[in-house]
Length: 262
Image (cartoon, rainbow, N blue to C red; front, side, top):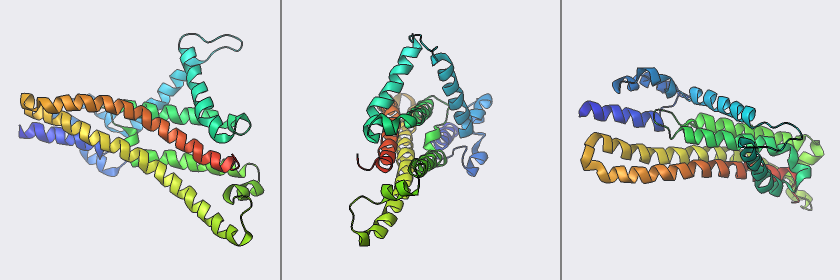
């Protein structure tokens, strides 16, 4: 019983604290051996999940691509609906229409798909949740930061100044507002990283705790198993919700800078 409990504690520890993005994960890589799954230790590392997500994305592009002039069928229809949803419900409303938002549609489609896939892979037993690693979410936020700067500076320094300083502001207040807007940009980047990380981390802590109780205590933990099933379904909803929220917030933040009058 004690050995089983320790094995499942290590299992929880792996999923919610020790990811492949941290050095201490290397000292815990043999915990799967206790459960008799030596061959599956490769899925302990977040880099494996990232590679898997990229492969899935490439497969989606390969199978969803349609020929010019040919109406999409099957999976192509679903993919088209997805792109139209991102474009018409997220990008265009926050960028003031197609003029400012058309070029950003591929970026937001990729962001949503990446986070959505990473979140759902984390619900598969023995897989790690890449978005539960602050290093991964920080990387996504830095990409957002880079795209924000590109969107602002691509039309020149004058456009960048107007993006940071609202029109009609009294001259004495402009330097202070300029500094505040830059601080706000860094704060948004930090908030995006921590928000996604914390939401995925918190849900998995509770979920795997309930599952571990059921495995350790057996029939006596039947109520916790029922709770775990409910939490699992809720986590599936959260996986989709967090991808949507991260994408929407990114679109709002960048749209505020690209088209401040909107």
